[in-house]
Image (cartoon, rainbow, N blue to C red; front, side, top):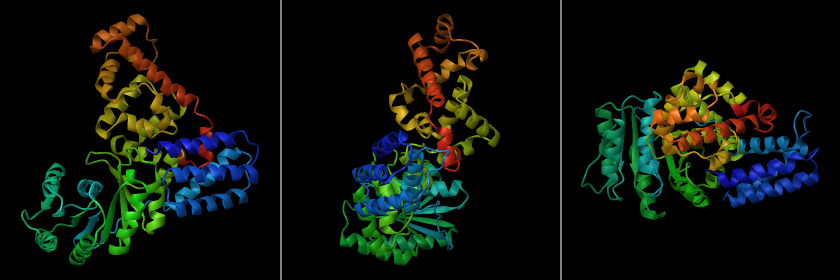
Amino acid sequence: MLGYLTEKMQGLYSKLAGQKKLTEENIADAISEVRMALLEADVNYSVTKTLVKRVKEKALGDEVLKSVSPGQQFIKVVHDELVALMGGAEPELELSGNPAVIMMCGLQGSGKTTHVAKLAKYLKKKGKCKNPLLIACDLQRPAAIEQLETLGIQIGVSVFALKGENDPLKVAKLGMMHANVHQHDLVIVDTAGRLHIDEEMMLQLEKVKEIINPSEILFVANATTGQDAVNVAAEFNKRVGITGSILTMLDGNTRGGAAISIREVTGKPLKFEGIGEKVDDIQIFNPVSMADRILGMGDTINLVKMAEEHMNEGDAKKMEQKLRTASFTYEDYLSQIQMVKKMGSIKGLLGMLPGMGSAMQSMDFDEKEFFKVEAVIQSMTPAERMEKEELSVSRRKRIAKGSGTTIEDINKLVKSFKKAKQFFKNMPNMKQLEKMMGGSLWR
């Protein structure tokens, strides 16, 4: 995700790297690059104008610290202003009421119904609710009810639906009565969408809102549609008063414009982001994390959150230190593969590390080879796993035979592993950049 914008921002850092100090001239050149990168990433024009103005004022007013380069100083300014533009801190959900009610809205194809289930599972997992209920008020799209019921079974959450009913207002009213009778502490209502905004849909949403009285109205937007998603969000906000947004498809081919623009345009925070197709693939939107990703600094905020769910604090600190010093071994590699099986994608995990997003594009690594890699490392001796023994040709033949793979497979793994370690050893100015970001690179 965000590949184009990240590439442009990293190129900007490289251009400023050779400068001895920030001047009006090189700041003007850098500002021009930032403006072009943002516009080409489909960031709203007025948002781009605001951001560029703030960056220029801050960069011209800042003294360059002796401990960092002008390039680092400028990137720090861009980072801070991106964070401010996207809201500063992680937003919180307002879950007041008994039951608390969340209304989900958006156009067809945005992933709205799927994210109704994702959000329910997330909130239940985090202890925000014990007995949620999903109400199927999308009576427009064929199979929407069946989809929600299937998802409800998958996540172990009840679904209220009236098959054959054509009045979503009746479904909403009876659904709320059902929630009260059965003591559900959270209700999430899936509403109808269209392929475009129309008056009928908006009137229906307004009436459903009156019936269910939600504490949160979340607009679900497909991030790959860029500026169109922002414009639609603004229209929904005008009509039904959204309290926040969820950006979906952020794991796909998105240019980043919606993520940067949507809060500034609607005045309402981005609250969650969808990062995959599985029901667990949702996370709180963090402005610092997004700014880190845009600037090619990885996503260590969410990486740590994910790791904390599967690793104890001691293991996490050990792994962090090994990544810092590029001292991780095949044994660590095996442990991470086994952990990532539970977390999702190892390629996605590695891509969350600073600088690895672009590096992963050239690394010879195929996610489908997980089980093969695991078998190869398990066929190594303890000394080989800890890199105390060189993997000679004879050893590689033995490992290949023991794991049911080929010499080419072993060579491929060794090559990828060495490339990853070399990357961390050669990572430029990471300590200096981390110091500038107040430790933000390794939270």
